[in-house]
Length: 112
Length: 115
Image: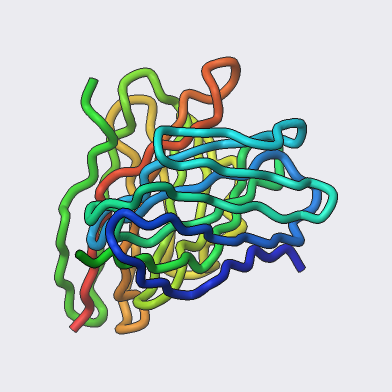
């Protein structure tokens, strides 16, 4: 069964600290993996998207890595800000037309 | 270029009524996706449409739910005879498709409450 798992379920960090979120997937075939940020009450916003051949991709303070062999991805956030408080969702696409499977998300709280 | 628009943002229906959710994709996007997010759960794929065609509806319940994306106008997700379990946030996303790319852009969602 195609699944996307994320850890930790929730995380609290101090403002200015770094953190890393994990994503494991069993989706096959694999087309691409994305990380989304979802603020409470809003739609997800794309942070990064990586295809099979890409190992890492950055977007400002966000850096995503992908190991397609072990089917693992991580999202590293540096110098966290209060506005980073949100749910971070790992999403894997299994088809060329982009049918996607969402992970349950990691709820990040950045506190002063 | 306006983003993906959804309306209404909030919708309250009594059990047995019909709910109609609208999604206007970004300009130039011909692919629309609908997702459902139940309380405390992740988003789940429902249906993928291109103009006038349903490409994949494998995530949509077989009964009471239907979707369309006409040649003109917004995409519509219709839920007939709503039940309490239909209460959720419904998100629409659009993408250019083809050589335009696969990146999906999400709307703000419609929060459906069935009383």
